[in-house]
Image (cartoon, rainbow over all chains, first blue to last red; front, top):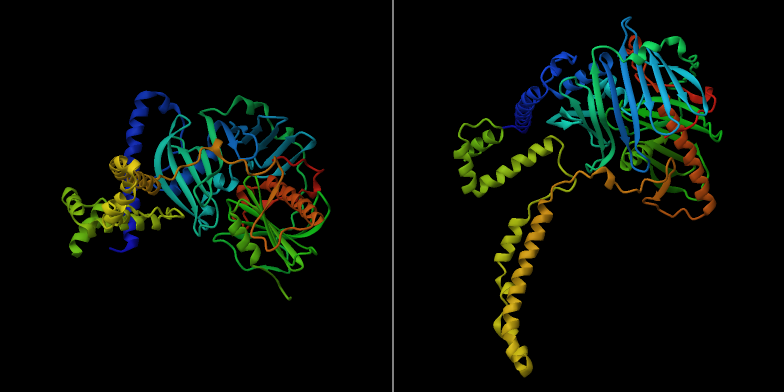
Length: 343
Length: 209
């Protein structure tokens, strides 16, 4: 028997087992909370594969009326509790709110494609976006199908998360160069309940745990008081996109692409750098290239800030700094592959 | 021969109706047992779930080694008894020592085997979050750790300058992340899915982690 066939059969076998387990759990849940299950709106979506579960989640996130409380946990900083609400009003307007509950707070409010930011120390402003970029990766929630180039998606078992029967999904980068994700989705609604980011040794790096999920028939009463006119003016954009550059990157992890390439002046110290942004949809990596004379002709330094890897490679007269949620080895591979054209 | 592997393969795939029969065969047959392990190893590999350091089962090797080396487990009586018995004071105690020694050796072997088995069969523990080591630096800051340095950052000025530079980069990266937006549905068909705003037009937004 070929290995491929073996693998496929294992997978189907696994699914069958998880379905049976899910079924058992479900029947138990149904008897426990009769009636409630019937009134909770849910997305009608077949979901027997991991990709279908992700599609179900994506549809649920953008179409249901919900109120979610979750906590973001990262090493090195305090836990961050958030409230996240979404509703579609009777007139068909999409409304979304993300609220950081600790400290001076940070409130983000979206009406359709206008996102207003209300933060301490900064005058309120708006951006144009069809979704709020919160702790959950924006593309994972909204366009999970776009992650297929870089990640394998696997259907895992079922378990209980946030008091609900949950389906576990595992995402692993195809070439094992990036961190992976474990997701737990509510079996009834498809809403995300928990997200773990783990490194290549399966150690937990970052965690988001939903503590309360309420899916309702009607949007939250809060949204009745909100209208697009309450949002500050949209800030004009100045995005230079991908511009020609003398730098060539010879190695990119599977599924990663250049999404930005430009000369930038840093707002904090005014220095001019060559900036390149790479993205595979799930993680974004920034590259800063500058010509800096140093005593060392060749030097590598790696640091970690929260879950971001900060890696600097001094290579002759220029230095490359890579920042992003990727393992140091991958940052090294990318930085080492950079070459200046025409030199 | 191939039929017996075929049966095992079917069992592992959950397709076999002869599960009891095959399982018994596996118990009897060393070769089949090895195959059984290999099939599971292959599955892990294909699903990319292999640990970085595979927990290879060395218990059988340890057992074999222990069995083939009786000389160490039961040392020659002559060599043990002679020096002790020669000293009158210890002459009487030597019998006790001998017995105790045997027990100690047996016990230490048992401990070694138990430790070995525990080490080998340790499950991969998912670290509880609270136990994560606080190595990741000060809040919002950066603690550079030397890594494969060809030469240490020798001069303080160099290091300070580097720190300053990296902090500026890190702030810039965080800003990029914060101003990440998603194009509305109508333009989602574009090749460029990511769309970030240049924050330079904004009035110095605070960087929040």
